[in-house]
Image (tube, rainbow, N blue to C red; front, side):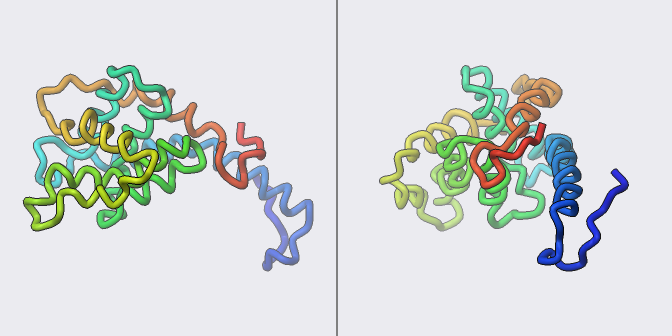
Length: 192
């Protein structure tokens, strides 16, 4: 795409300018799954002290969810739940949730956003923190779903002997989930 808008201030943009920007935006949005998968691969090699690297942990979490019969959206959330570790180590769950929010259900968004605190149930006491910190969310309708995610798929996915599925198995799922926003101001826009 060689066309570019002519304005230097958004308030001076024309319908033609925004049509050009819209074309570029649609192409950029269509490439989102590729950028996400590329960013996920950055997690390879960094174990953070665990028995497997962060990439393997994400594959293992998603593999467990898939083999347990979870739907495609849930499996993609499991795959990407720790994608923020590389650039948001203090709030990785927030970053992953923000990335997923326009594309997933409110429940899956909530699970990803809060999994860090819920995961603390399994180790916070070893850091001098309250392992029941998650209970501050006990009135949420998604509390049990998040606790289940951590118990069944996240806290136990550091096993170097586990037979993970390959990233290629998850790529079509990532492409499907990120094909078009469903929960944002842009949901009516055609990204296909």
